[in-house]
Length: 66
Image (cartoon, rainbow, N blue to C red):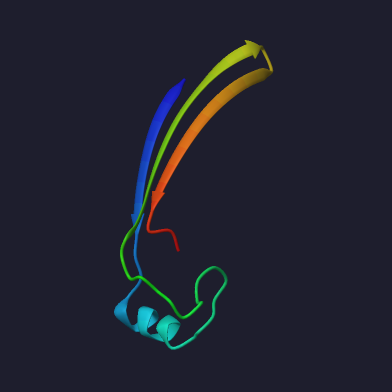
């Protein structure tokens, strides 16, 4: 089985302003926000070795991570 995934996300200007003023949340908020859309591409391949065992290779590329 092979697959390809893509995702993009962004934050509102109000949220970006809050974070740039030093606001803190779970993953972002060091006061140096580069406001740009986060984009991720995921490519994977999986094959069965036994009926209950699979080996999977995965590649992920993330641009502008939060």
